[in-house]
Length: 271
Ligand SMILES: CC(C)(COP(=O)(O)OP(=O)(O)OC[C@H]1O[C@@H](n2cnc3c(N)ncnc32)[C@H](O)[C@@H]1O)[C@@H](O)C(=O)NCCC(=O)NCCS
Ligand SMILES: Nc1ncnc2c1ncn2[C@@H]1O[C@H](COP(=O)(O)OP(=O)(O)OP(=O)(O)O)[C@@H](O)[C@H]1O
Image 1 (cartoon, protein in one colour):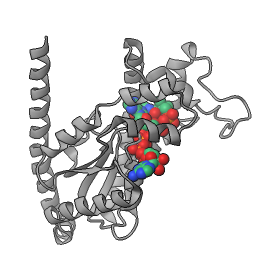
Image 2 (image 1 turned 30 degrees about the vertical axis):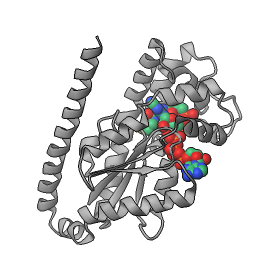
Image 3 (image 1 turned 45 degrees about the horizontal axis):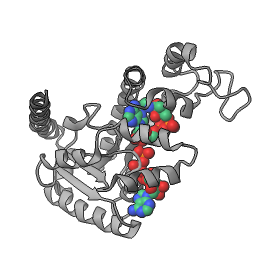
Image 4 (image 1 turned 90 degrees about the vertical axis):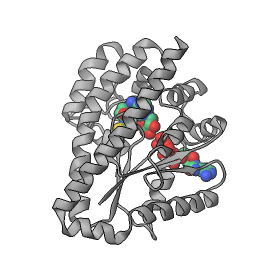
């Protein structure tokens, strides 16, 4: 089964693309990391308790008021925009707090993702989509046979779509969110290093019709490098699937390390 990583940056169109991939003619199962990241911090979970322990002394509005939607005997839900204001941004304390939050949420999300991947494999799907906004930042890159980056060439389009979709965000909040992630154009360049069919970019600067055509174009490329019959062969022969998975992991790890080394060298030159 092909692990098809789907990433990009905030509001570049990942959810729109994942919805296209989950419908015919693709009908692929989608594992949505954002959705899981919400589930693992619901009141009563250990993720919720850790967040409340660390953030509540310094964030008075961390929880939604009593009687709000989702409140139960297990506690009041997190006030996500307030927590977002605490962790998104480029100052030292925001970066530190973001790391703390990631350290609480990411391991729990990974566990849920493993469970859903096994389930998709048992059901015989030729591929499963891993919709992970922070795919490169969280180290998932090497596990994916193919990575699809949804990108826009113009950051103004990204900000405009973000503010139209989330009108509750101020311009500063929206900027802080965009700046909290790696540049999507750099992600697009990075993914191409993986080679044809292993790294693909869907450009999403124009309308949704054009986006659909872009998705069809890149999925043709993915299918050519990972045809259905190959998926079936791996399914009926789990040891072969294990070997192929290991080889792919090793090759993609090399691509990842080479990229990181190159970026380190570039930074050193600027010092
Ligand atoms: C800070 C939180 C509570 C804000 O919640 P809110 O509902 O306002 O935003 P939402 O979760 O829908 O995220 C929107 C987008 O922000 C970006 N984003 C989310 N978390 C992070 C992060 N830690 N670093 C950089 N970007 C992030 C992603 O592109 C995401 O798609 C929430 O984003 C969170 O818990 N983040 C930490 C967990 C995480 O990394 N989630 C991403 C997938 S694993
Ligand atoms: N080609 C397009 N033309 C016009 N609007 C678009 C296009 N693609 C996406 N959008 C809109 O832009 C907004 C952001 O798209 P989407 O939610 O798919 O992004 P995302 O990358 O999943 O965001 P996030 O990282 O916040 O989850 C949505 O309101 C969506 O309808």
